[in-house]
Image (cartoon, rainbow, N blue to C red; front, side, top):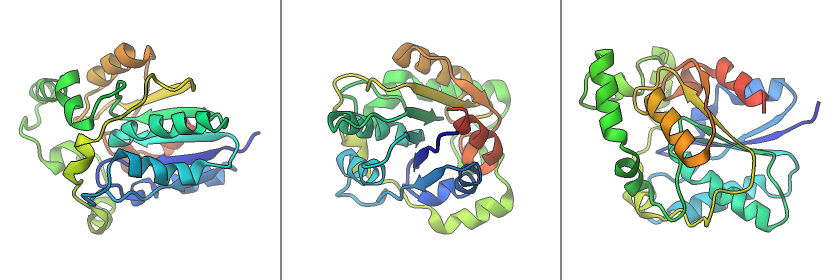
Length: 229
């Protein structure tokens, strides 16, 4: 079995802690797993700064798997592009409940461009949870209360600057790309994720149990999906 180096990129807020239940599972399977902490609350740090931090943890290693959660979907293609320019081909890109950008898009423009808000509201009406966003209903509904409580000290409010940063790829990197979608994600509902993955990447998502914060609620299922890369 070849040993991979999983470079794990968190979503909004940038807390590497998000991956703390997945890292030991990947390591137990004989791989390296590095969760990158990003300065999500720093108003001077946007996508270029995020990508530089992730690149530093990926550069110089073979069989790198770049994994982006949610907002991290904007960072990993930038890192993959930079690695390719250095003649270092990542093994794969994996997008987990992720925002999938197109060239030249900003995270701020993404929401309206893909129709996320209407998809979220439609799913809420069909599923019977509140249409108005709140953390408990959309992020923590399937996370163990003890895990959620432990995460409070790691929470950071994402700075506005990143939503104005441009994902300045010219095309999606020529790297095998896997989309992992959680079937009970209320923030990015499964049918929405499936549509975006098909339209933007031409791929069919791998569906796993869990909600938006799947690495916290279903670490074993997510780790097994990552190990299948």
